[in-house]
Length: 138
Image (cartoon, rainbow, N blue to C red):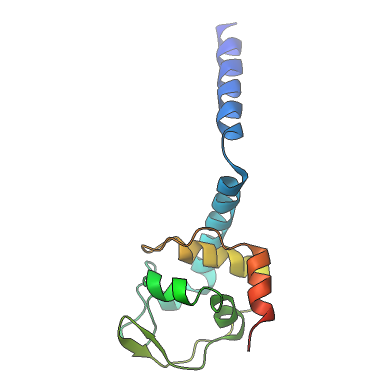
């Protein structure tokens, strides 16, 4: 009997805690955790496990200022690749980045992960924002 009561109380506590979380918080965690998997599969090999990049060849993903200033272009970089030099923290990187065959929701997830890892704090980048950004790609 005590076990049933303890189980019921535990269930109520879990439901209470879950109900206290905002929809934004739940969405963020969903995008972030699945974005980590997309990063591991498609980005980590070049950009590194900690987003450190590779010397002068591959840029780091640790520059919050660059990411914030180019937030609306990041989806295009992923979808179409990048074939022009970029400067991050005073270093120029001019090797091409190949396009990734990812859906808009996968791009949103990986951008949420990158944007909130490696010292970055960009919050959730959702699928609607990515679709709007992709519509503006040059």
